[in-house]
Image (cartoon, rainbow, N blue to C red; front, side):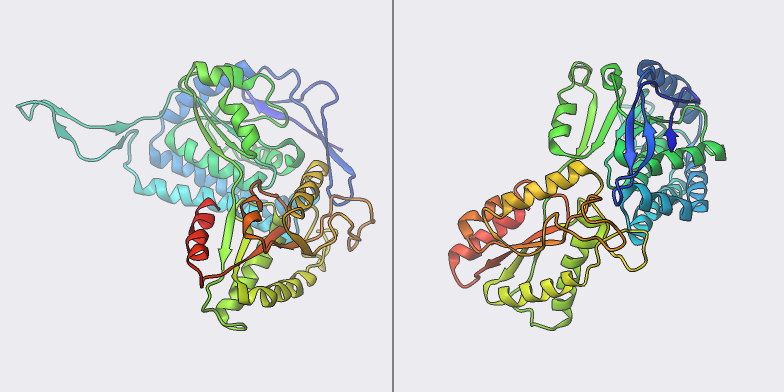
Length: 429
């Protein structure tokens, strides 16, 4: 079984204590342990600021861009290995793993290309200069400079590769060192990526630090020049915003939390048309891809009232073709959700939705996985609901059910009330 370690102060540090056990979500078999107990978080931040920050600020934008390009190449060189780890630890199918890993190296490469378009210097002009007095001898320019702190990134469980890379790319290009903390449960991919980046020698010393498990008292040591970026639940985001050090030092906080997306079928779309098939394909794909565990997944499906039965029947047919099971198998196209808690949350969300609507497809957690053992693994059936009550529609996915779940709701465009109501519902989504 692997032991994940943290990369802090320019060295690998193993945590003490029992730590967390990471499992294969398809089999529940342990695959790794991770602990940050005993890691000196204050010293880790100081090293990142003092060593990493100094090294990055000494580089031009284009030099930082070449660092990003080297990071991208290091990840791409081990693409297949990383996809395999995503299957093992994330419950991803190979297609899902590609989505995450290719997003990581691709984003780093994109920001490397952007760096080539920036000035070959250390500051970024903000518009044209301005005359500050009566004489043009007194002239001023607004410029962007790197902050003197560290960028702390707390990432989500569903995209351990892409989440690490997309946040790190922007911070490193701007000249700020990064402390990256993945969700512990799916941290194997992120850990291996950092190993590859360290081995490659692509990054200046101190530019990237990594915590393999809990953040401990890390956030208590943030200061006014630091920034905090979080992806995950709105509840956790609210907690992070309310941290004592965050408030006392006015730490800049960026939170990407619960989202809610809708798909709307226009009243003029004919059954069997290209647009009809595209609509159905998008809804079904979003329920299947990453087992519905992505912030862009469609949750509310609005259809004309006279098309409701046709849409539901067509979606049921498509969902019936989804093969749920061991994601390492070629004949499986949807794996489990990532953790036991995630499965409990999804099933609880389905029960809540069913109080306002009706389940028309899906068996909840009662799944006989292909290539797996019934009762083992965190499997959830693709679940489609229908809610025909306008008074209940506001409650549908008011809190996002983060799994392979969507709800179809009819609208009637013939009445003024319905026509006025729909845009508001879409805006809320």
